[in-house]
Image: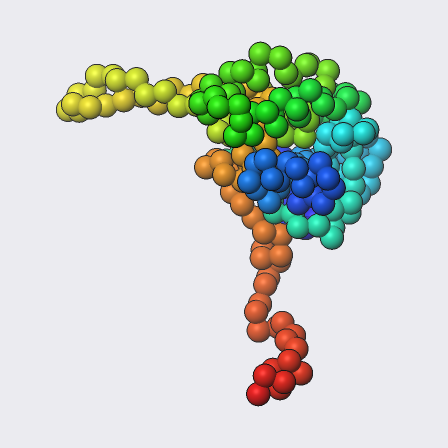
Length: 225
């Protein structure tokens, strides 16, 4: 995985704790957690030699953890396409300033309230209801922290798109697409998976996967015969 990851990649994690199971159920997704991969320069500044991630943990808040923490967990990579090197540096530098912040439990409850099918409120109004009281600047959850970092460098995840008619020579129905930033506190890990601006990479495939090298249970095949 370390040979595949690039600085600025988002690692999605399939957790198994009670909270992770609840998040997966509410979001109807496999993913319950997200973390951001750091570059070598950031590791040196923080005194770490191993590949490192930054994440928001419920108990310890925003912290740095080694990539090895998730070596036995189902973890695809979400890669922001075309991200300029300067913006990668800005993204990671901004991320490090959040280390030590606490976990925003209120944000988590608000997100759950948005994702639940009740109360009977139209979906397009639920985000507005929750945005009124969540997202304190000194607190974060995993997905809202990473969403904030990307929105600070104007990189889209799932922006609201407004179509505005505009005149264009030879065009009768031309529109301009105007992107509107969504409240970062309303992002869930699955949003990076379904975003059209992030490429999904499965760590084992770029390493040279060859189906012919797999060892199958020959005894099972004999039993079937």
